[in-house]
Amino acid sequence: MKYCIQSPIVRISPHELHILDPDYFDQIYTGANAPKDKYLWHTKAADCTTAIGFTVPHELHRMRRASVDPFFSKRSVTALECLMKEKTERLSERIEEHRQNGQPVNLTCAYLAYGTDVITDYAFDDDYRLLDLPDFNVKWKDEILCLMRSLALISQFPWLPRLLERLPTRLAAALSPDVSTLLSYKNRIASQIQRVLGSRGVGKHRRTIFEEMRDSPELSPAQKEPARLTDEASILVVAAAETPAKVLAIIHYHLLAQPQLGKILREELKMIMPDPKVVPSVAELEKLPILNACIQEGLRLHNGVSARSQRISHVDTHYKDWVIPAGTPISSIVVFIHYHPDIFPDPRAFRPERWVKAKANGTISLLRKHFHPYSKGTRSCVGYNLGNAEMYLILAALFRRFDMALYETDLTDVDMERDWFIPQPRWNSKGVRAKV
Image (cartoon, helix red, strand yellow):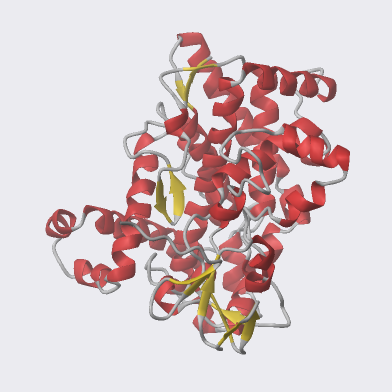
């Protein structure tokens, strides 16, 4: 016999609480006047404990976050628009090549290549040029999956990366291929950081993120150590590339699976893009209701982070009749809110019209209140402006310029099947593929 106890608050370990109440989400995650720390145990998973997203103390996080916030402000992202459009044009050229030779294009890999080239150019002035590779470097997609899969293992055995570092490379790879992949990736990032630290950027048209961090008077020497900057860059590159790519793949899949929706979006784009070769600014594209709704719905279905993200308050907190002692890790999983049928009816369906209708009938504030793809509060995703801008530019350019049809792709290639901190589809998915 099975027993099910329904309660909005559950003790999921001897130390941690999970609260499933959409109206309490803000209480857990927001409030600059109520500092909250991360949960130390949870921050060990990525082996990048000095990166902003894995910094435990509130004050230390605030100081580290302040050093990179300016690079991802709306103003800075607008100034980066020329770079993003340059990469968008290169992506269009590559898709046109696929159209001419009749080969299907792997959109998941293409979008991942785009995001990676943008962030590595911005961060290091040394982009990986994945957009130039014949298959958009499908190995990079597989490598990121290995990195994600390693998180659960490292969270339980945080000493494992240090052990494998001391072993011969082949032996380490045999013992734990995923963790070895993580270490190899971090070594590559460390080399790039060393080049940045040793470069003065003479003659360059702009300074990069890590050059600015290196020279920042706001950061102490300890915060500029190569090991810490390597942690920062390791997380930044994957986060800035992987999430927008997966959201774009979800959106593109559903628009191709529902051709009428794709047609509606294309007609909207024609109004603002009479010449397909001229992509409007992000500010102009943000005003398009259908495009905006498609992006919001894609973000909702993807969720951003599918794992628990705990917060620890320095004072006692209250939830209904419960008093939660200071120092207790508390979390609320975004997936449960984004897929809540009372807030988002038919929650697993791609329905961008829900956003358009909500805006028309005055209920949009309810959807926005429970929309957390970038989390909330002082620890929300630092790169949301950049990710959003990339999505607007790519969807506008590709849907205005190309007609596509799905190729050997179905819903299981975008539906969340695995929680590896970032949601992932089925393990053997090749990604969203289409014929042009």
